[in-house]
Length: 634
Image (tube, rainbow, N blue to C red; front, side, top):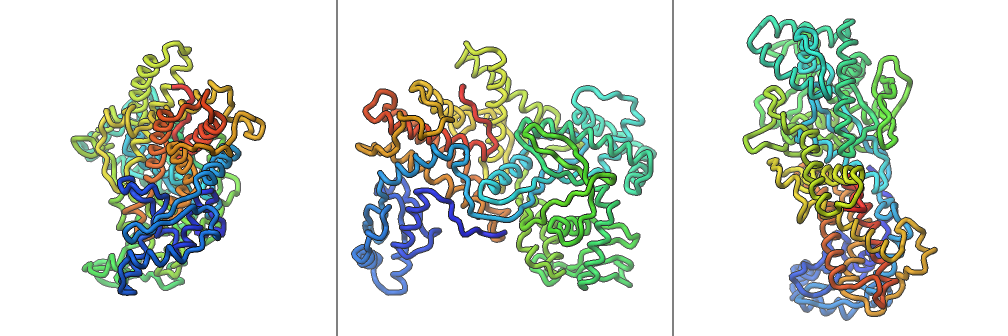
């Protein structure tokens, strides 16, 4: 992970940098005063309170001294500074910030908000759903979180690879394969849904009949050893299931670059390469006595997470020479960082709707090496925090401390039903599969579209309903902090009021309607439209300024979220929700501006049209970062 020397780049960023220089405090120590403060200031610093302890003087007096000593001629974006009870309150030159922000947003259009704050390659792994059933709404949270952070990191300057791990050797897969061979049922409907129901039936049979369980175990053995025809048939079944699952992913706007199958990890010799490195670094040893005799173990008692355990050692290879899950995960994490030669070959798995070519590991595929990652983010449930720390600690013990520091677990709480967790074995996902939820969402959205725009062609209504319904579901999964548990409620997920995706989409549609009424094309180059004049700042209304100021903050918000990858907060407290909060505030400020400031036909029409166009692009780009489709007619 490398921070670029470039800054986010906006009038707001320039203003904040000047305030930092004038106050002599780091940027992160500056904050926007709460609305209840009633100061009207743009930024505030509490530095005088910290200085008071060291100088043994009153904060108010120190603030007076600092204000009188500041030479604001050095800071052209600062209009004035005041002492408010010991706080330093800074006021921007409104006209300069307004014109600079609006001009930048309408000239950069779809690029506005992107920054070059960071550089380097990042690999994000998500959602790693077992390939034996459809995604339920809990899986969707993993996918939406992974996809959203990937979008934000890319906007901040990183080169991002989105990867999915496919566990095609699991017991669940063996059970659905047994079901296809013995239950005499032909696939009906979407394959992942069919297999999910089949799995529930086989799970029940295997629990009642030991012979069935034995046959399933035999299938699993053949899968692990690559014995044909079973291994080949299972792989084909799994790929078909994943392609069905991805149809759901595409509806959510989720796409991948790489798929790595566990069977290829086993057959590629990846684990042996990793184990050889572990022995070479002295990280592991083979026990010769005791209950772990014959096992390869790694002693992690030196790390805080293991120090108080009765036994701080972790088994990586059992006495029968089979690898444990931690061992496989360590090997895979090492591969992600390019710590040894890439053993995989790849084939084109699918050309996705957004134009991405998704590659899948394949024994007979073509040579391809993804860029060695500077940072790896694994999106996995919060209950996997200890196993993830096990992997990262083993990396550190091997001497790969830099890679350990650049390994992040985006931990999230699961989505629950009011009556408890989802279960694949019991089939509690039925009715709550993502497909079912999206169908219901689109249906409810269609009723809203019929009510608001009955004159639209039926095909157009269907397109809008799909976009609005999908956005409503996706937004409820990303607007909460990952560490917050979500209890799925239909009314909240499909809400079309308040802090919900349709409200944000409506704000964009409102901008488009205003511009259309004035004959302004938001996609046209600003320089060619004489009706726009961002430089006209006479009689600037407060609500015009506040909307422009918020637009100015987008590049800094993107950089801040991308820069929140810190070990002490990541996985327990992230800033990922800042973008949804930003979008909601943007829509609210637009609504206030629309209420108080006439646009078309006003004496400031040129300036206000420019502001609306800037808002259009700011909202459109923010929605894109959240994976929400832009709807220009509601």
